[in-house]
Image (cartoon, rainbow, N blue to C red; front, side):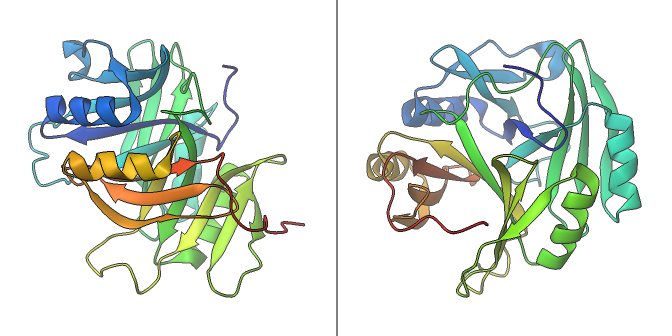
Length: 263
C-alpha cells in the first residue's frame, strides 16, 4: 500500500501476558496467521489475513505486569519529531520519546490531554497495514473519551483533521477526515460505561458475520459488552478477548438505517 498521510490510522498492535493464547483466539476469530516473533524486537509477532499484514501481537514486557492488555492504534507521521513536538505543544503527553525500531520505522507513544493513549508511526521498511476494510482487517477506530472537548481541540491541531459533528441529539459523535473520506471518529463516553473504564481508542475489525463472530468470542471465553446491533455503517458488537483487550467487530455489508448527513 502507498505511504499513509499524517494522521491516517496505519497500524494496530496489542501486548498480552499469554501470547500463545492470544494468537489462538484471534486465529480462530479472524483466521489470522503469524510470523515467528523476533527476539531482537521482544517477540513482536505480525498477524496476517490472507497473506497480508493486518496487526501484531506482542508478549508482555517485564515490569508491565500491571498494564492490562489493550489494542493500540498508530497514526502515521512523515516527520515523527515534528509530530512529537506538536503533541507537547497542544497539551498532550509524550509517554515514550521517538524511538527507532530497526529498519522498520520510528515510533512514539503518547496521550491526549484527556488521557487517551495512542501511538505514532514514521514508516521505514514497514509502511503499516497491507490490507484494510476486508474480513480480518482493520476498518475504523474511535477515540472513546470522557473529555470530548480536549480530544476535539487536540487531535485536529496535531494531525490536521477536519471535524464534522454527527447531527444526532442522542449521541455526541464527531467524525474526523483528512479532506476526503473519514479516517477516525470521536465518541463521548456515556453513563453506560463503568467508571473504572478509562478513555481509550476502540478498534474495529471487519468480519463476514457479526453474530457468528460474537458467538465465537463467547465460546472462546471473551465477553460481549454492546450488540450485536445494526447501524448505517454495518452490524457491529463491542467485545473483550479472554485477556481483557477491548475491540469491536463489524459486518460492513449488513447496514441498517439511513446514513447520517455530514454535509
